[in-house]
Image (cartoon, rainbow, N blue to C red; front, top):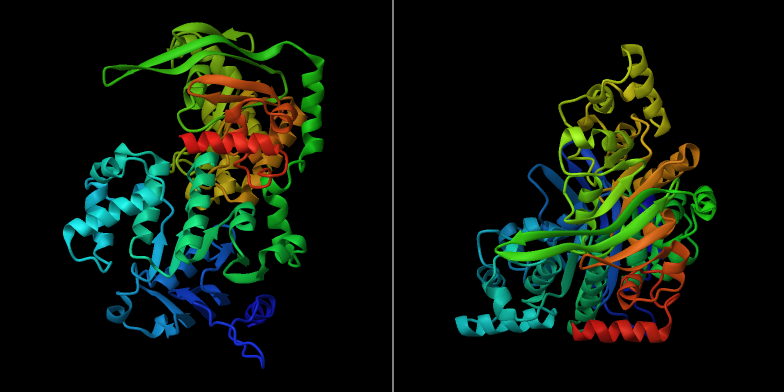
Length: 572
């Protein structure tokens, strides 16, 4: 009950009847909500209010209970789950309603925007056929009127050429377009409450900004209440009027957003605040300083890419993925490649690894030239260059133990005796802050952060000069991400490693990198130190990316620059 009491005192009362003022009752009132999966209780005495047209964000890492609470509001808890307490929507306790009585509320009065449009939409049916199901929840009964309403709603959420979207299959649309489709389907019946579960976590920063601004605009125009599920405090600060911070299903802190950010009282809320890159750009300044010193030495580049071009043939058309690309990376520093999806980042990484052959130009890693694909010609390159993949849940063989996973690169290069192999594996594991007791575990017995540390240890075991980091923290919670970043920068300071860091998270790039190349449509449009790129950006595209970072928007980018970016976006 302690969390319930703390919450009720922190949030404004909306049902109090004073002598001079009767405040409106909340649209959604949650009281003493507890949820269990079998015998395991995962949500403990949670409570909050959302008024008409207001927004509230549930904040916390994976396993904190955010999505479980959302499922309880939507009555979508899996079989075997039990919920107690009250969830009162529009003065009806929906937990006590039968499924038959609640079903008309779901979709019509309570809308839902899921996290992953790739899983939420049926890949073998057109967008239009799926939209008609949502339109069936409206008061329109004529088929032509329903289609007209769908097209009107597609236009409202910013989808150009709504007819083409209506006729398309999901795979024919971009991630940003698919997310707009999901929002359109959710608002089509004009619900009173919209539940958005991590609606932008898989999107580029510029698309994320547009989606969030779209939600805010629709909330205002249609007077919709918003329950936002997110792990990103920077997003919550911008988009929610109130916050509920959860850990292990228990409320740690709650209240108006401004109050929670200005003076968080719980240790967990303070830590979560400190772990958000957008809110703490200089958190790792001391760990990065050795890299800046090496950069100032102007020593020979560890990586040199000169005039590289790569084209692909797609459906009979020639696509230039990388166009006259040139950059260098000083030894012992971190160079970031940033840009939206389709900018050429992944192709650049494949070229660095020798997995693709450039049509022109040259690439050198350490003292080796990256030549045509082939194990024999690239063996020396791979000895000095290793890769940490984006997703630790899929990059590690689930049937192998940690010891085998870390040792495999040594086995492939036939390095060391049995005793030397064992010592090298334990050294690599210690370097990433893991104990030897994990060596006999399989990936399924590790947390997400532990898996990514194992992936880093696997890359370190050959003692390479260069490590390519391909979105190494995008699948991790912000607190786990902070731990991984500290590990990477500590290793760089200790071992003098050179990193190539690929990311769409510019706030994280600002914390981690020394130099940055901004890529657009296969070309580098701007290049410089992290201070130059983030402090005095010159290219409109860079300005557009930077304006999408929550803590940067309106703070470091000048007003004329913001207007120029806005005008450019309106023209798109």
